[in-house]
Length: 499
Image (tube, rainbow, N blue to C red; front, side):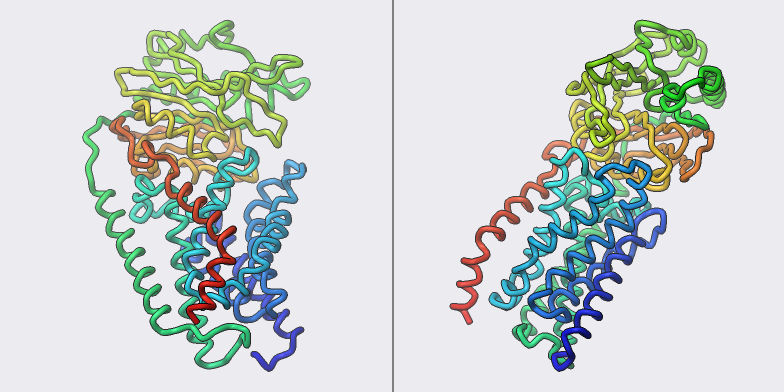
């Protein structure tokens, strides 16, 4: 293709970049084509480093990232209609700027750092997103594998960013192999140095050994038994969001009917033996410890279950108290958790955030987080570090994430070896064991009622290496990202001297 015209290179390069973005989109739920995540970025890298003209090479990754995020996040934020709808374009433009000199750098260094810098850059950027209130772990590249429990167990050691690094390692190694194969047949890029057989072979061995070792470790961890009891848990999913119904004018009767039905669902779950029953986020707009309008203390005594309830208190001129509490079978309130990560792009606040109580009960050590807390790794980890074995997740999703958001529960459970119960206001509720196995699930992009009841083994209360060390792979990657950002000139000069 070296003899082909610039317009043709542009057309083919853009097409490959779009193809890669589509492949990554299809890897995620609801499409579930998860193997695409292992090689979906390869067309983007081929476009960037072999097909596009050198001065336009960064268009490859910019277009691939923008198409992927638009395909995955575009529908998520479309109903909100805020600045969030521009995130895919913003990410693409940022990628265009940061990747502008990468092709020149790799040409100067003989692609010695191609795989390592690519993996570190991806993992480092995932780490950066954990500091951003509007980002979190949404679109982390490990999420397509949420159903592959045989493969995801090492996140209890390396975290979700560690698994993302492995996935990108596979993509970059495959791209390196394909570039050498293409170079041997056609010199697609006149500016690119010859990729040595030793370099490609070395990275092929590293990639293959890493993937094989990960799989073997995952199977080993999956078969390490937990010596813990089983709890029958339930998630109460009403047909409509209680908090949205409560805030709609003239909906008093509808809200009363919804609450009545949720109480019926709770009794039905208890009749099936449920010992731990979770209601959605914002189930009502008052503090149940001050006003028990729904008779929750009596309901807990009647059902002889632990009830985890989400509620919202609006303080005029101050903000929201978005909280969750647990009642024991004696009708006692065990404590209050304030939502740790409010949805700031939706105007939400959380006045009582910053405490992470756990409750020692006959069922085990219980805790709560709320909805958007799922999208960050730290909140569940803080509870697990205190011995939490079973975590309730009251949530209030909107329709466009009802086929996606529950996947985050699986990774938070595996990261910390805890069981989790997500109860949503109309879209996606799930019960997950400490290995990430789904014990009950009801999800979709339209409102529907569900009463999920399932037996779930609880965690051992000791947490994992991820619980203790946090996102340590992400921190290492962030340090590496800074090194490559500021030390690339030195590496390039060193590479030229070696040549």
